[in-house]
Amino acid sequence: MSRPCPCGAKATFDKHCEPVIDGKILADTAERLMRARFTAYSIGDVDFLIATTAAPQRENLDADELAEYCDSIRCISLKILATEAGGPKDETGMVRFHASMQVDGKRRLHAETSQFHREDGAWVYEAEDEEVGEDGEA
Ligand SMILES: [Zn+2]
Image 1 (cartoon, rainbow, N blue to C red):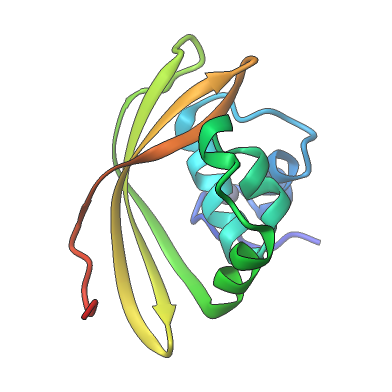
Image 2: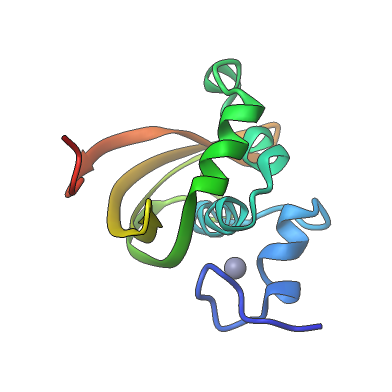
């Protein structure tokens, strides 16, 4: 079964984000992890989202809340705008992206610059750097 990867990569889901989410391979770059996390949001893989969040932030995550959030949104597309470091030989990295999603039936563009670093060799999501272009928030 091959279907397009939710993250928009040219490779199909079973060759792209699925093996990363299933833990069969490690994301070699921060962008690869970013894409896998977007896909995990889209399919509601809460375990992966928690496992790939940096340790201090991980403690604040609530699996049920996260699952509810995943259920409440529909991820439409991901656009990577820029990356800084985050390569196979780097320890830290930055990924700037636009995630297009549907929240409560309304299309919303989520713009974020994310910081990533390695924990025991594996990329983890550290935090959001800044937030721009949040539409529709009262
Ligand atoms: Zn993918």
